[in-house]
Image (cartoon, rainbow, N blue to C red):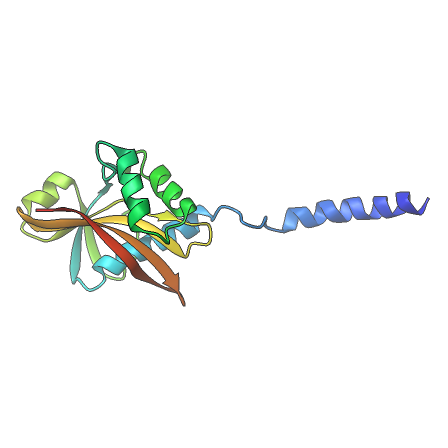
Length: 176
């Protein structure tokens, strides 16, 4: 008899609590991912008076043989978590555009790739950023082009400590 009374009390309590608690190891909220993605981009452009950024997030950095590039990334970045790499691959499967509302801590303008390459200014090309669940590890591809034959592209493994992003490792994948 006591078991039924306890069950009648515990069942509603359990249900009520489940509505008000966040699941552990939950996927980060989109707004949190976007905030951290902007912080990563800011890391690379924050010291510019005005940054020119290609609006379309590049999705072709995995090249003609994506598995080969993924294997190269894995072997180069020993501390890269599988969830960060999986997030990077997933977030870069489809073309997307960077938001004109990002807070990068500096003035920036988004341009098409064609417009950016025709200008005389240095410009940046970013992939979407892959993150681990804790949002303290990130993988991003950054292209930095200063002129027609003056540019390079790197993968960066980044980590967040004490609220600040820093480069843990980098791997050059192209140069011109």
